Image (cartoon, rainbow over all chains, first blue to last red; front, side, top):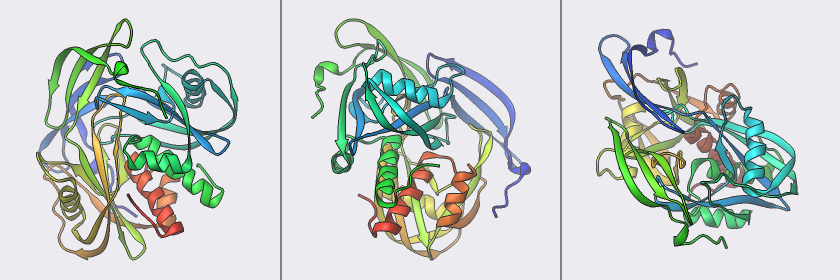
Length: 187
Length: 187
C-alpha cells in the first residue's frame, strides 16, 4: 500500500487561462504544496483521443503523416482526437474508417492512458480491431495520410529505425507481441 | 514502402510564440498544406524526459504522486524532465536516485518515444535498471512522493484499477511482461 492521502493533494490557489486553441488549451495554476509553500503548474487541456491496433491477416494497419511538432514523418496506428461528447470506442471506429477505409467487425478495449501526466490531461483510449472489412477512406481536409500494413517483424524494424516512435504505437506493438505469445490482449 | 515524400512536409508560413513557461512553451504555426490551403498547428515544446523501469528481486519500483493536470494521485515509474543539455541516460540515473534512493548497477536503453505527437515534441527516453543499490532519496523541493515496489501481478492489478494509467508506466509493464516471457528487453 502506498501512503498518499488527501493532505498531499495540490489545492488550487489561482488559475490563469493563457490560451484557447482548436485542439488544446493552456492554463497556469498556482497550487498550495503539502505543508508550506506554493508552486505553479503549467497544464494543457486536451479533449482526449482514440487509437486502434487494427489486425488483418497477421498485419497491423498504420498511417504515415507529417507531424509538425517534430518536423518529421511518423508511422502510427490510426488515431484522432475525440469530438465533443463522443464515446471513445465510436471515435476509434470512426478514425479507423476515416483514415484507412476499414470497418472493424470486432472492436475491443485494449488500454487507456494519460500520454503526458506531468503537464497534460490528454487521455488516449486504445482498442484492438479485428475482422476488418474494406470500405473507403476519407481523411480530414487538413490531413494527408498514406495507409500501409506491417507484419510484426516489419513493425519491430520500424521501431528500430524510429519510423515508428510514438508512445501509443510502440505500446500497441508490445500488446500485439504479448497477444502473439499468450493469446491474450487487452483489459 | 510508404509513399510520403518532401512534398507532403508542412512548410511553416508563420510562427506565433504564445507562452514560455518553466516546463513547456507554446507556439501556433500556420503551415502550407500539400497542394492548396493552410492550417494552424498548436505546438508544445518540452525539453524531453527520462524514465526508468527499475527491477529489484522480481519487483518494479514505482512512485505515487499527485498529478495536478488530472487532479488525482498516480502511480508511475520514476521519471523526470531533462535538464538543459543533459544526457537522457544520466537523467534517468539521476531521477531514479532522487526519487527512490536507488542507484542502478546496470542501466540499459529500453525504448524512446514521443508522448503526444499530435501537439507536443516531448520525447521520453525509457531505461531498464537492474542490480540496484539502496542510497538516500531526495526529491525536488516541490515534489512529494511515496516510493513502493510492485510484483508483476500487483502492477497488472494497479493497471486494472487505473492507479497506474500513464503511457510510460503501462508501456514499461508490457516490456517487463515480454522480458518475463522471452528473456529479452529493450532496443
